[in-house]
Image (cartoon, rainbow over all chains, first blue to last red; front, side, top):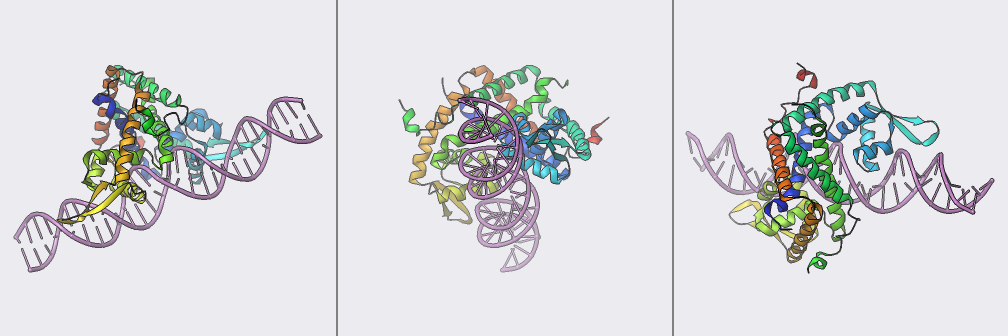
Length: 158
Length: 158
DNA sequence: GCCTTATATATAGCCAGCTAACTATTAGGT
DNA sequence: ACCTAATAGTTAGCTGGCTATATATAAGGC
């Protein structure tokens, strides 16, 4: 596999794009006291309510402690509610409050608008390819047995 | 522009991929006391040394305070050096130390290996399309006049 | 020459994301 | 029944990324 300029720059491009998108979104919803992470959570909640924290973590592909913090914040903002679930005293059900549901609805419009803006000059075919590429990268990341490349790089020299 | 499932999921896919890649990389270089952000900086430094902090920020597309923090850490690890530049007493030149240069060389091999792993099942054509898509998204983000979508979403309803 | 404006870096404070380690409860094997 | 293992949630601690603001120096207009 030749190193090609494309290959060498692509992963950087990927993280830069992700960062810039987050920063833009954060700026847009800042005045509402929100940001991308909290918005993602609320939107997911809007679709799958009620749900426990483990399920949320799986849906958002975040670690558990990250979910806890996000929920702490959203709860303080009175946008979500953690309540006991009977039958399992360990678990907590997360639901949107009334103001939370209202915010979620507005966010839905907002992300649709943002999506149109950021993707307006990209064809369905291009997007399909790009999506397949991201999917493969994610798959390849997850196939990594946590430390396979870990040894010092000198090992890699043939 | 129809909302199509592709469009609706793509931006999420983008941030997830970016996050997962960072996490994987962080895990790989953790035992060396590094992570993706510090590695990116050192690699850039390896190519363009010596350089001041403003130039670094531009190359890495990071804000200034972020650079300061990264350099603080790397300096404490004795991997980089901030030194006065004569002719301008405001500026500081950043260079790699000897151990820093050694690390940078190893990181170079490591990222090449990681790149091959994550992109091995992706053709040059697919990558070209994906790269173009990311480039357009970045361009579209940067074209955003900082608050254009900012009003509450209700404004968007025709 | 002086005063305004721009530039280079730093500090403070916020939040997200991670890993590691802890508590409380539930489920399961024997 | 009991004791072990798995599961749900939390806490602590680290780092990166951002915005807003401050400081020091340099450059430019007049």
